[in-house]
Length: 357
Image 1: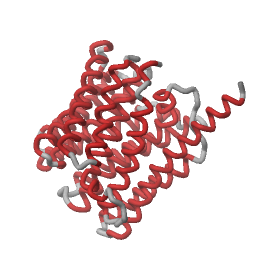
Image 2 (image 1 turned 90 degrees about the horizontal axis):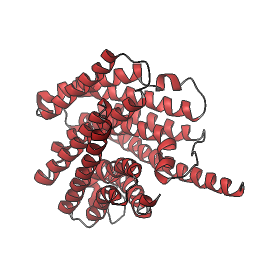
Image 3 (image 1 turned 60 degrees about the vertical axis):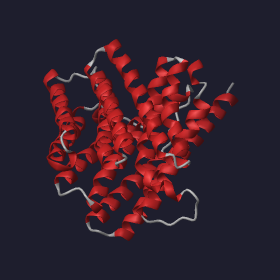
């Protein structure tokens, strides 16, 4: 399709953002690497949520519209990485803000076209990303942005899962419970999040996770084989991490190691479990290829991610910095190797299909 002309620029930005975001996280947690990009450690969150995840999510929706100009949206958020590397944070924040505004416009277009409850959730998620980026651009304070970034990813992922369950026999009242849970969460982040608002946000996270565990189609797909089971298992584990995130928020004041546990239970446990689950399905669609990049070996990297995250959370709660550092190292390696494995599987699949012609 013509609107994929910018993919050779956007996809490398996404991949490099992931790798540098991981590297920045390692430096931030205490690993000392003789590498000239150490100053980006302070931008770890913005790179991972904005330059990587935001660009990836924008790209996923942009390719659906099949219009060249829409690809400017993921390109804007992707280019933020260049500004981060040039130590031009204000320009990077501005690029992320522009990209999130474009994402909100795209979702607004889909909402006007389809007028479904899941589209309202997706649109609200895009607005959360925009608000978080505006907070960062205006105040240059990451704690003000983080709760909105959590809202962005929670609503986008939940909206997409609700879109897939629209044909399942779920009662209207049951769907309403999910909307209420999400509304409670959003109310919590509108209030001062690091005050009483976090309690509402935690309750919203817990009930959203419980709802997804009960009603998501993964509960049926897990009984199948191959890639369907792989994706379903990761989805269900991710929903468990969503509940765990809410429980961690309720367990104490959010600072120090507990703050680290909360953020990574959500961003790694929930979000990256979703990425691992959806990767073999979404990536071929974004690239416009007919290859299904799945192999049972992907279980290894998923297992390494989940186990190392559990160890990291335990290390956070028990204040064990050395164990926490090693667990974080495996977290990052699992993510990187998973994407490398996907790339190899895509290459082998394309090669196999060409040889078959």
